[in-house]
Length: 244
Image 1: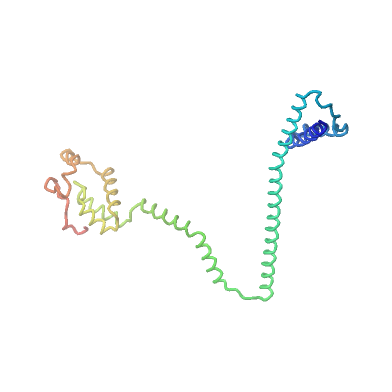
Image 2: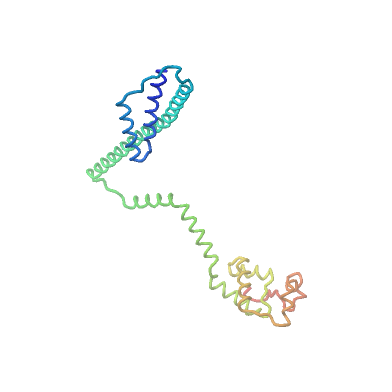
């Protein structure tokens, strides 16, 4: 029982020390005062074995629990201290290596200055350009693609618009070019068929309104397709026109 009592007293002191970790300052002060007072009094006197078996069993179990608690807490603390020690060594190594590198570069620079070696500005500029291109080539490529997209979405070239307007004025009564005419317009203007389709769609929405006798034709697209030219009241193919 004497061993159990001493072990329990030691474990209790250790438990108090562990509880101090992360506790507020006022709590830490009270705990330190209690530990100092207990240490001054010394361990409790052992009681007689068998005086209270239930209490003895409880104290023994409690002491074992405190010892396990100490082991569980000490393991992560040791690991943390080991990790901090390794990190400190790595930082010291990096600091020393950087210092050596700076010193070597400084010495090399001083050596160049002493020897007065002539430098080629054009070669330096070329090397700098190559480094910048290697570093930012992907970013520049993305910017170029975005610029091309915005350019396609913007206004059409002036000459291309003039040719489309010429076709529009010549076919104002029925401004629906056939597929062959769209292909010819694409060749002459340098635009693709999607751009041409969009231009005619926007132009009709803004500047054209079918007459009353032509509204039924607009509602029936098959009247003005290439396959049904006879049903179209206005011819849609004009190969004799010069601007096509």
